Length: 290
Image 1 (tube, rainbow, N blue to C red):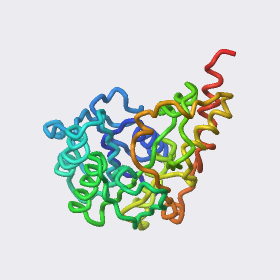
Image 2 (cartoon, rainbow, N blue to C red):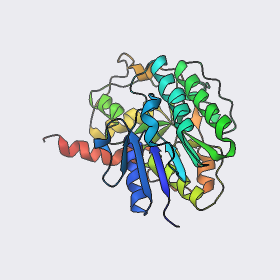
Image 3 (cartoon, rainbow, N blue to C red):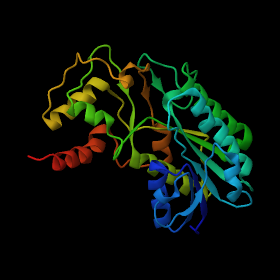
Image 4 (tube, helix red, strand yellow):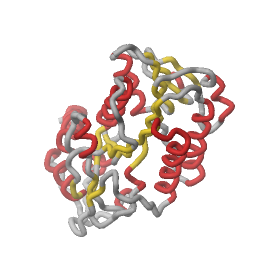
């Protein structure tokens, strides 16, 4: 495969891991973010704030083979979400030239199902909260503007280095009720980057890509089970009567299928939460004095 020019917009945590892998494969990578000093070495850095179109002048006139959008909101409020996931995306699309394929990182939070249903790419999405509605609006904007050149990946709950909130809650002894069952769908950060890199490779090789993939590991699991497995590995006792954390109060309990992604040939580095959390647990053990 010949080297390609790839743009990663919102090149933060996931985008940075993806950039490093694409560079190792011999591609040229341009990264957009507000604080370019945090970009990986070797990435062509462009200081851009997608919410401020005046900063996108450095992108206009540039040609890219593939564009990957991994923008992440810094605040959980409706105004900021719209600025990032709809207006920011529109500003980027306005600045792009040529006919690049665009991959957009979105979220399984667009689904409204909450009774343990199985979800796949054909399931309806009618989000009730502002976050899901705005993410879905961004997806539709991309589809309207690019048609078949657009691919969306809806990721589940991302965890990994620097994303250890659940692990820290378990260390603190915070459990959750066993009933009613509340399913969680998780994905390790490295697999987020792996999925996007896999799809970039397919696009560059001229292989077909669907318009939508669900980026979750292969084991949807009850949150009670996940917390208690982590606790067992750490030798921690959990209080299942502890007041619910904000994440636990959020609605939703569904089981998300990754069959389309597996059928396309993606091989997970961390196919379930046990495989993904094992190195994080090991690192936590070595950081705690005995």
